[in-house]
Length: 331
Image (cartoon, rainbow, N blue to C red):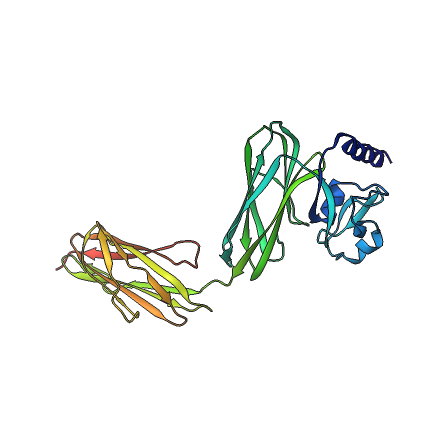
């Protein structure tokens, strides 16, 4: 009753002073949590007047206690239909950066920037980000927030955001499914929503590259040659794009030659000390195998170690591997 009276006086004050109220589209469950509705409020859409109509629209698989339309506590689902409800204008904005596309088993980073655009500090600032729990797995947040696993919601509370300053919040998740995922973010102060955003990302199936590597002579005599062979086969369900390989030959060897087979055309390379960088191969089709062969001459005995890195536009990370070889003195 006291909450309803306070809200009524606040609305009446707006009419007297001429303050602005605008209509923004938000999730109803979030709106009820942040903005209790009084009976007879003409600024609230017809859909919010009847609790029965609201209950029909929800899926009761996930629930959370929020303030219901009559001022009491009601367990409601977090995924509900959108509706219109008044939100007080504030000098704050929320910007969200997220990749448009990622590949399965790679990480997604949501970067949220909260901007205080006004000349007054924003007190009791609450920042929330809800991840898609069906196709992602929560990894971490920065600065560390409070994560509610049952709802997939990360929450931060900032006591004070000074005028004309910004603060960045990040959430990292692991993509574990295919298809489109949706993340919802919002900022509110003193139970009033200031801004909200919805971000979408497409998760695609990962390519499956099988990598085999070996040396042709092991052990190898000093002053003799050996070749390091790297075979990359696309055993996945889609083409790989821009295959890139950099090879570092052992320090006890000198470079002799390099060649690439399986592309149907000449693949060029460049040298920088012991490093050999091959020109990217635009497409490695399903079932295609590309073979790299680097030949070296051994100049010192000892334990040799050839290393290489492989990446594509589809991986999201660089793979590193090594091939050891024993160099011995000849008889």
